[in-house]
Image (cartoon, rainbow, N blue to C red; front, side, top):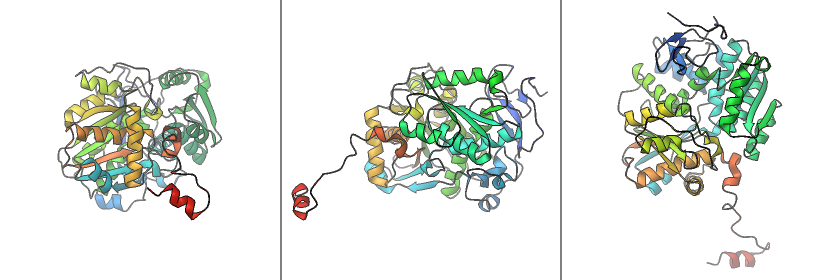
Amino acid sequence: MAHSSTAAPTTTTDFGPATGLSCRECGAHYELGPVFACTECFGPLEVAYDFGEVRREDIAAGPTNIWRYRSLLPVPAGVADKPNLQPGWTKLVRADRLAAELGLRSLHVKDDSGNPTHSFKDRVVAIAVEAARAFGFHTLSCSSTGNLAGAVGAAAARAGLDSCVFIPADLEAAKVTMAAVYGGRLVGIDGTYDEVNRFCSELIGDELGEKWGFVNVNLRPYYAEGSKTLAYEIAEQLGWRLPEQIVVPVASGSQLTKIDKGFRELIKLGLVEERPYRIFGAQAEGCSPVSRAFKAGQDVVQPVKPDTIAKSLAIGNPADGPYVLDIARRTGGAVEDVNDGEVVEAIRLLARTEGIFAETAGGVTVGVLRKLVREGRLDPEAETVVLNTGDGLKTLDAVAAQARPSAVIRPSLDAFRAAFAN
């Protein structure tokens, strides 16, 4: 019997193959609506589906964005024709030079900096926008560590919705500017991301937040599904096969859990051959509650106060942390962390070897990849994918001190020779 909430109206709007919401903990079923927590056990809700037959050729015939996978997402059939940013289908870069430097046989970088607002957040927001439309919300909102704020502002502008996003006041200047330029309301809060997120949860229950869609709160079950498209694209771009190893950044942990869900869906639908894969989570040392729990053999993730240059990963109380632990252990992976110095080194390493300028979150994943290889915890012979989820132009301060002109000279050949004689 389906449960429902008086505060969460259901809808008959087309959600494609989505059939309802189910609790990840107790399995209780709910009709599709703007709800995110189970009333039975307070567990998180996620979208349940009846996919039917899904064929590779039908996917290949679709647009070169995430809507090629619309038959696997909670969106209507005509979603590609609506005003949206059409994110996705970003490059999977064969990273031979980085692989050689690290001692890996096969390495690819999934570079999501090519999305419309230059981070993977465009994927998840695109799904949330469709849910907001379906539920009649007029304002798109979120709590954000930076990238999500820009993605929400841009997507709302494109869709003709109002936006009001909330951020910690100390975010990187480039992310603040990008979030503000789209014309919606941008509110800085004197506090950590976790405090911003708690404030948004309070706002949902207030009349001020009526008819607002908070993408990572009351629209979270739909929003989170957007990360599955990373799994779909990686598999398709590898020739419809799963990578043997993948390194994923961990903030809330949702992205990692949905990549695993995407891989499992592809196997179940017969779109890829079933084979073992290992998922590794990557955190910054200054905000590494999941990594600490993994290393300690614990199932409970203890909250921390973030202190790291990787602000996009600075979530001290990650909602999906326990599920990240489960997936890392089930797949034979791990959750590891690197310090800020290693993050900067990894940003420069990726830029020097592959011409990809990653933001600090990308420095975390590449840094963790390097650490896992050095410690013999990642198979150097296995096909490996590492994620870069954002553009380095958003976090310039992280590398500004090291990325300076090689020399400043007079405009003459003699001056150039003198500067570079050695």
